[in-house]
Amino acid sequence: MKAGSVCGVLTVSFIIDKWGRKAGLVFCSTFSILGSAMCCAAQNPGMFIAFRFVMGFGSNAFVPTAGIYTSELAPPALRGLFGGLNGALIVVGYSFSSYMGLAFFHANNPMVQWRTPLGLALVFPVLTLLLLPVFPESPRWLLMQNRPAEAEKIVHRLHRDLGNDEFARAEFDLMRRQAEQDKALDSSWRVLFTRASYRKRAIIVMLIGALGQLSGVTAINNFSPLIYSTLGYDPQDTLILLCGWITGGIFASIIGAWLMDKVGRRPMILFGFGAVCFCLIVVATMMAVFATPVPDNPNKAALGTAVAMLYVFIWIFCGTLDDALVVFLPELFPNHLRAKGMALGIATLDLTDLVLLQVTPIAMRTIGWKFYLVFISASAVGLIWAFFAIPETRGLPLERVAALFGEETEPAPTVVADTRVSGAEKESAVEELEYTGPTNESYV
Image (tube, rainbow, N blue to C red):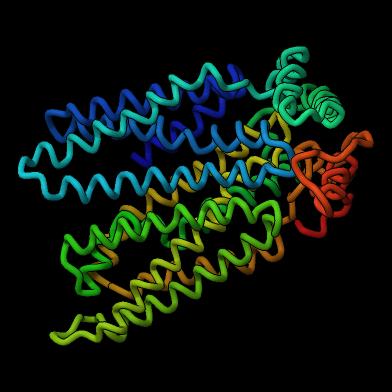
């Protein structure tokens, strides 16, 4: 499935650039429906494996597509919140699958145990297709396609309910002028690595994707039975613990989404790497001392501490690194490279997962707790690297992010504050469209 995800993520970057962000959602939904339906109906392992590839081709392509789509529709002051809610809904999906696994664990018919959860996976991509007609297209993509009248109408529609026409006009003017510049620029994959400012951003998105997964979140999620059995829990308790583990991440992700626009992306990422590193150190210590092997009379307090730290780990990860993935990555690139840059980061994430999913079961059985040293080291490296490399994008219009990487940007007009915020935040909102950004490269 992860191999299919890599191919799907790279393919959807072409789809959403050529035919639009909504077309990308159609692409994702269609392949998810096809893959899920055929996996559910599989008659042999070969058929199942083949359509798991198709399922992955569509399902994980939702991550870059939704991240880009949300970032291009959201106002600067609320982009972290709206983007972070994408992360929360991803965790909702994981939670739903965990609860279905627990529910059908008790089914007497083996076919029902695995076919029914796969069938239920059809609900959400079908729902996406049904709701898609009411969604607007991205105004930034429309401007890149020389359709300014449609783009302006959508921008005003997004601000209409709040009666903030002056802010909408200024925001659209900034989008339009930046799009005129971007249309004349090279949008090839090659330029991502040959132009210095783009290359720095490409390295950032790839390392965020790789180091985030090397913290161990996917390995823990997919191989939790091995982990909890090492700690002395039976299969049913393992499923219950997994449900509680991933469900708590929903609330943490919502809180993280709320904090993204208040605290900023950079502090959240730094805290995320540092805190998950600490949690992993505690888990590895408890497993090394009290669960290698589990004695006949185990130290329940120590084993409980390990489980508790796994819970804290996922709360922190979902509220910081996971939210940052869908908020921060699409913010970094200009219009003509945003799809490719986001796809590059998610494809790197999927490739990292592909390797981890192959080696984790072997490593857990052979070296046990020592495998956590890989996750601990990666998180520590992530913390140090992020401190020197991650810039702050909070509150900046997407058209202003390039200034953080030493590129010149169009001067923005003076505008009134966005009425979505008040008080001290209103002053910040005024500055959002006035900001011209630093010309140095102090963060990179």
